[in-house]
Image 1 (cartoon, rainbow, N blue to C red):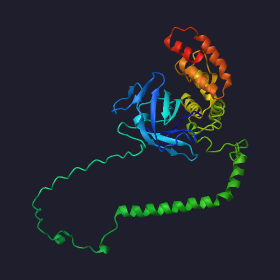
Image 2 (cartoon, one colour; image 1 turned 90 degrees about the horizontal axis):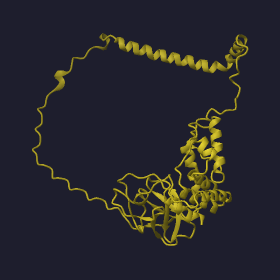
Image 3 (tube, rainbow, N blue to C red; image 1 turned 90 degrees about the vertical axis):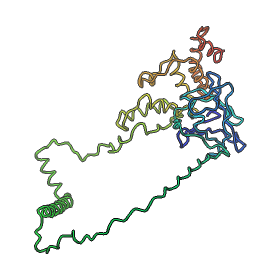
Image 4 (cartoon, rainbow, N blue to C red; image 1 turned 180 degrees about the vertical axis):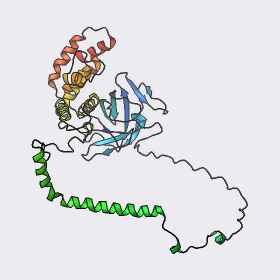
Amino acid sequence: MTAIEIIPARKRGHAQLRLAKGALPDPTATVTVVDRYKERGLGQSDGSQAVWNGKGHAFGPYAVEADPDGRPFVEIGPEIANWLEEYQRLRLTVGATTADVVWPETIERAAAATHGARIAGAAAAAPKPEPEPAAKSEAPPQAAPAFEPSSLVAPARDPAETPASPGRRWLYWGIGSAVALSLIVAGLLVSAPHWKPQFDDLLASIWPDRPDTDTDTGTSPTSASTSCAALTPDGLAADPRGAIEALLAQSAQGGCTGGVDATLALRHLQTAATQGSGEALAMFGGLYDPTHRDPLLNDQLALTLSDDVSLALDYYTRAEAAGAAEVRTAITELCASIAGATDPRAAEAEREFCE
């Protein structure tokens, strides 16, 4: 797990930055954001576009809270989250803690009119109500002249002289028919257990090879009613590749609906990477590595990302630090492929990761 973990908050455009226990001893903390790729800091925006400058603005201060496990966190809002891109490589500073992170795709941006997060001591100033215009003085309306409606009422008719309308007779007939039909259906349902064996015997004599529809096939009628996208594979952080393959098998057997596509696989891979999975970080590195092709992600799921040796080596290095020792071979091979490269980005990646 990285020193700063990024978790989606309940509100759109908000995110929780969680740290290790004891990392935020003060009741408030500021947050600074730096783009690691372009080495520029995020400044205060007027709401129309992002402002990036040299050092970055110290946002906040934000109130320091604690999750059920006692880990401190601050909750940032659209003033930061609305200007960050998915998978953007950042350097976050929360209080005195600095960590290199990748901004996750799970943080949804808020609407442009949404502002603010839990900033300590900040209170939104309620707009003052506009004074209501004085009511115009008008003369009260003149009352309409009273009239007696009794002259409009038709003389009462003797009920005995009024014949029942044809529409009412049809209504009575419909109600009676519905009641009779309900009684017939109820009687059939009650007597079904008694006549079903005789019916089955008769059907068997006519159709000897009839398939047995009462046999339990072992498939639950609701087994395929759940969308594959709503399922979280077991052991995702420990074995992301195996978890995604298991979800593919479950979909193929009809255990969930909607199938498993590249977008769903990428979402599960991102979740595993944010949980500190070394294998997930290595798989991300492989997606950016122009010399590598993954049979599961590239071939079976058609998941591809643009070739970027710098991002590939960055993910490989983080995967190795997270315990994925087997990624050292991929680092060595990729470094060998860019040795002496003239491309500025490849040359920078060689200096940063291969020397």
